Image (cartoon, rainbow, N blue to C red; front, side):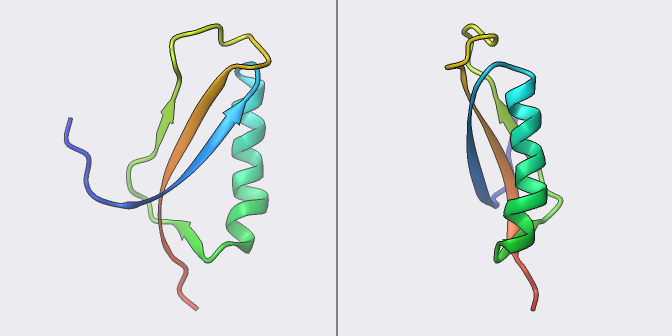
Length: 72
């Protein structure tokens, strides 16, 4: 798979799935983006889920969101 070049924001997530990732996505769009100098650019986004116990409260995953500078 070829991934186009972008600027990315990478958010680390710790906690049992699916609640942890759902809560993080909510915080990203309700807290991070409204106050950030960046906005989603509509490019390819990724969620990274390592192969381990997704129900563990220590499970770690990532969300990669392609962004661009917000126009003022």
